[in-house]
Image (cartoon, rainbow, N blue to C red; front, side):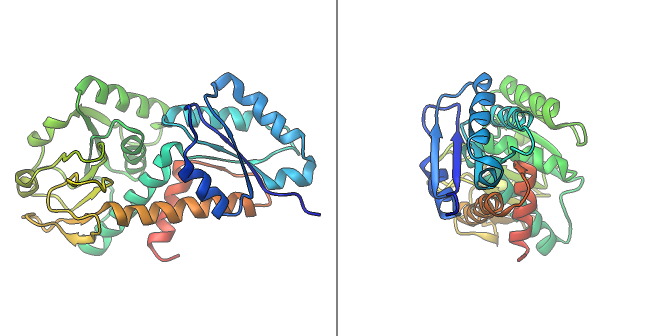
Length: 301
């Protein structure tokens, strides 16, 4: 009798996301076990308990998922997990805190495709702004875009927090990318004539770019909004838009709405969870792998 697929789902938060549990079971993980309020120094023991109890054949049907609310904590836990493996007792692991990595990957992949299809260009050297970008989706999208060659600013309600978040992103993930900068949301008015791409990643129901700002963004090519709760984060952009012209734009900008992004996110997370199930060798998946998969999906692969 073959051993069942077991996914150990670890989070520093007090609850595990039901969304992630549903996604994991639908991808083939027949047993999903939550571990909540986990501290970094507890990860090694949990991982080694998981790998030593199933034997070399069982570890191929064992995985570890890192959730939570914080991008950097999830990545730190992933690194601890990797270092805790003792070959041949190795299992696959996947970090996707708050679904931020797969959401950000889906958003950036959709934007990249719209840039190519509508404007004949890519992210390299584009001025990209993540409005409301100090949360996990904004941070992950900023890092992915910067690694693709964009000039990125993270903007938030408070300048000092935005600068601190940008600094952490650069320190943790910035060895081979353009430095991300931090600024307050209202600074967008000062650079509207320079912005090529906008990621709206603020809290639900918060509009971060109004009608006048959309009109004034003379270089805007693509805007993407992860918010499905009215009002949308960007004026003139509908949740269903998929590279549709933005109402009121004077620059020919197109928009990517929350439902179009959500579909790419769903498909990306599903594929990565299945990859863990099907891989003969351990894989360690995070935002960079999510972007690769999202790119494939939006390009029909």
